[in-house]
Image (cartoon, rainbow, N blue to C red; front, side, top):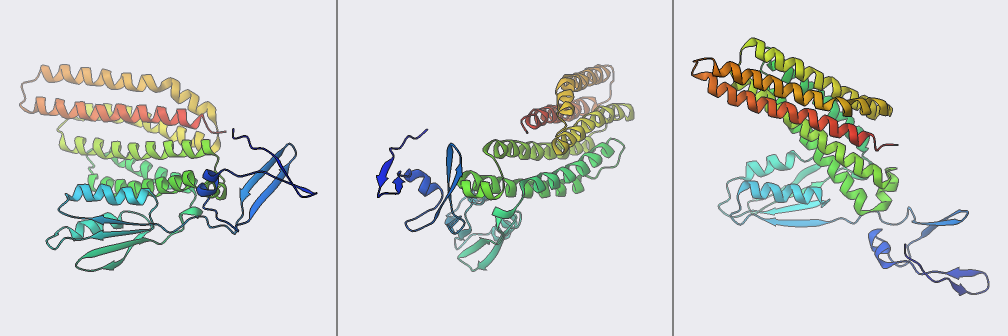
Length: 330
């Protein structure tokens, strides 16, 4: 709490000073209007709608013989840190222009406005202050469910890894967009107020976004390892049954989130250990089966089965952590 001294000003008013850090945080300057809301024993001070919400920000990134993954990290970091204009300076011998353009296209709202032999200029064209985090979460949820269905179908020989991979890219785009919105709201309380987000909601939504992105990664890996393996039909069916139970837990977590049915989240929290135990039991039985066979592919399949189970268990744990996050919502 910041305590300020009340100063008499003329015959009918009193004055208090406002902390400089609050002025800077809300992008205010001399002459801007301040709103006062009398709530009885509290007087709420807020920046007026006429004040600027956000200044346009720019950043320049130099290639200078950097690896493409290094450049990707810098570009994504600039995007997540809410820069509105990103200029990438190109070396004369730079040969990854197509890859740079692909990275930019995978960041929602960022469009290439200028391209020459020496630079690429990308600018943000959407107002992220009007984007609903709840809608982003819902869209990520819809895509993740489709990925889960394809991952389970892989256990029946229907390998749709390419489709899953493309959907994972869509989830990543939404995750980056949601992270950018949340970063903006954390930097500027006025934006959080416009989005009707309390600080605890911002934290919980950020956590949920991260878990949804993690879950989509797990679907991609599970499908890839299943499609690469030569597991027998019975083993694949056992994996599918365990997987289906975890998918049902996921559906109930999201139902709990949408409808604020916290009892569902509590039940999933309590059943999580059974899901991971089922994974361990399957892997132990499969390892014993491999030890009793002379097939050359047994060792390879055991390694792949271990990777599949590792990701399935991680999926179950992530669903449990989502249930814990849902319990925070009021």
